[in-house]
Image (cartoon, rainbow, N blue to C red; front, top):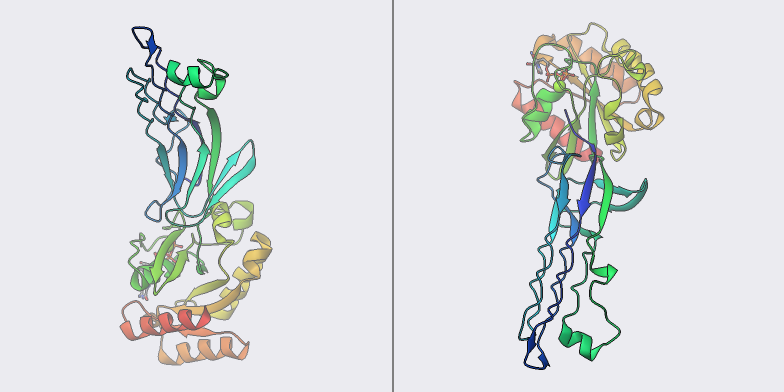
Amino acid sequence: MLKDKVKIRIQSGRGGAGSKAMFGHRRTGGDGGRGGKVYILGDENTYDLSRYKLEEIYKAQDGQFGMMKNKTGAVGKNLELLVPLTTEVLIDGKVACKIKEHGQKEVVLKGGFGEPGNVSLKRHPRLEFGEPSSQAEKETIELTLKLQSDILFIGYPNAGKSSMLNSLTDAKAKIASYAFTTLDPQVGFMCGLKLMDLPGLIEGTHKGKGLGTRFLKHTESAKFAAHFISLENANPVAVYESLRKEIKKISGDLYGKREVIVLTKTDEAREREIEKAESLFKNKGFEVVSCSIIDDESIEKVKKKFKELV
Ligand SMILES: Nc1nc2c(ncn2[C@@H]2O[C@H](COP(=O)(O)OP(=O)(O)OP(=O)(O)O)[C@@H](O)[C@H]2O)c(=O)[nH]1
Ligand SMILES: [Mg+2]
């Protein structure tokens, strides 16, 4: 299951101790190295937050102690926590940052300062050994993922949503002839567009029936919805209207997205039925495209329609 929320404990590196080394009467002790920082790093190749666990503490490295001959200790290695796009980082329930881009790097814990060695202490007598700013910082943070997309695939189970996602993109969504094959949102790229295949919807989804509405937070960013209806249904318009009633109950935002009707499984229907269904939707003012996954030409038509739409 898509892990889209997790609480984790993080800790920055402690600053290294300063050296008190002497050479005869001369002070030669170097400063401690700075403790490692904790960063959150956006990574487009990370799909969810499943790598993170509450039981673990994610630590940056401590700074090394200062050495004689006024040598500063090594700086502690930073820790980079890879997160998918788009992840929000919450500290004490407040959003500390949002990771929207690949490579975006935000510091969440700064790491302790290296403590001064006795050489620095002579130059700056106000500095002290063991000052609190050298300590490691600890924090519990919450990561929440909201997947992004341009077009959502919605429809009853078995309408052929995942099959089309796999045909249009390099996604490898599971396909099967039983209902609720897709358990979590699946994402694929097509000509720079991000397509998101959602779990099937049924009457009562808003009340938690079927797979419920857990996927909803991932639908916010999409402006368009492709509504999939199988031509195995004798009355595709009635099927569409009954699901629209349910979508209205699920979310006003989802209901309000601009739609394109995708009539699927044309290979299972007669030419006459396909034309009739298309014209019924067109007469109601809808954008319509019909297809079958065994007809490459029709898949190209879907592709073209999606590009026009966005
Ligand atoms: N004949 C025919 N069968 C299709 C076509 N597209 C999909 N199917 C079949 O329909 C069944 C359901 O396909 P999926 O792509 O898993 O349907 P889905 O809408 O993603 O279903 P859920 O994940 O359960 O919501 C599978 O057995 C597919 O092989 C098509 O164009 N023609
Ligand atoms: Mg599916």
